[in-house]
Amino acid sequence: MKTNERYVVAGGSRLQGRVKVSGAKNAALPILAAALLSSGESIIHNTPIIRDVNVMLEILRRLGVDVEEVLTEDSGRTLRIRSDGLTGPEVGADFTREMRSSIFLMGPLLARTGKIRISYPGGCAIGPRPIDFHLRGLEQMGAKIEERYGFIEASVQGRLVGSEIYLDFPSVGATENLMMAAVLADGKTVIRNAAREPEIVDLQLFLNRMGAKVRGAGLDVIRIQGVKVMGSVEHKVMPDRIEAGTFLAAAAITGGDVTVENVIPEHADAICAKLREMGTVIQEGDDWIRAIGPTRLRAADVKTLPYPGFATDMQPQMMALMAVAVGTSIITETIFENRFKVSDELRRLGANVKTDGRTAVVQGVSRLSGARVECPALREGMALVLAGMAAEGVTTIEQVVHIDRGYQNLEQKLQGLGAQVSRA
Image (cartoon, rainbow, N blue to C red; front, side, top):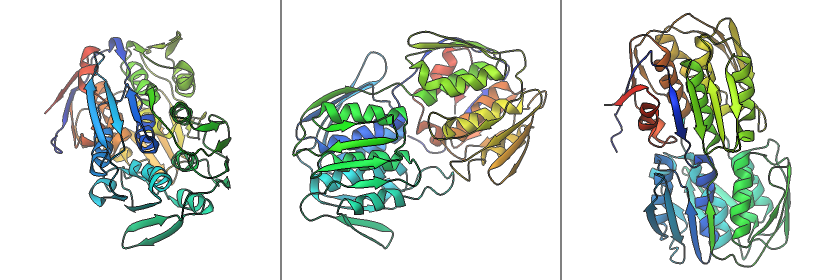
């Protein structure tokens, strides 16, 4: 895939129709890492066809894991994974610098092989995301960890041991990593102040179907009783709640009428509440949400918080909506300190955005104007697509490789709703 591709977005189209959400990026990545724990075969359905998943699969192959891919009728894919041939504990720097989620391999590889050597992870430049919580928890479980020359080297004599772990912050990544490490540990592990995101519940389902004994996912205390071995598993990845929220936001910003299918509506409660506050009509069914956008959105304030609060991964998209809303909106970002990078690009489109530390003040304007902008990161890039669809004229978005990390067939899905979006 080329890394210098761009989106060309002609604004002014009102999105209408139905769109199906793909499997969740943030659920699929830890589940793929957890497949290393199986002594049998892992069959994983509804795996999204996105850049981050492709990078993770290549890492697994480099580790000696056998991966078979089968495309399915709904444009997703089923993976068959066997880790019998696991050859080594080192994860190359070329992969970890591209994708932060490679850190998920620490827990499974330590549990399965007793050692790992991994470069410091990369990913989107949205501010420091320290891995101290991961390392401290693994040390409490008996791992010896050394950091040198840009690498983390961890090892354990025998098996990891169960421990009482308290997370200073409910980190999603640390919660998932420690869950995966604990399932093959000796004894019982308790993770307190655990993150509560739905993707953690999906990981628990996957692990338990494999033979693990995990309970409490979705609550702030997770208890894991270690087992000796884990077997084959078949699992379907949950729908992507951030993709669902993005398409709802697309309907809202274009004054459209879009039904988003293959969703779990309660996962989108926070975004739906804000869209209603901004004047969008929201209707829900068992596995769908319909959004009907107003002629002009109203201002609203947003504060990002750990789940079930407003997701930081939807904050840039909301900034795009606020840019064309009537009135003044305020965003308070409590998760990542550098998540306002998209504000510079939105200003190129005519947005009135002022930032100070973790606060952004957005004064809505009557219209945006198309311009050439650059995608700084995954969700920020999607915010620029939304803004481009609401702008007058043509917007060209450079470096859409970032968007490819998290959205499957984005331009085709948007085109199916009537958007004038093309890839160049």
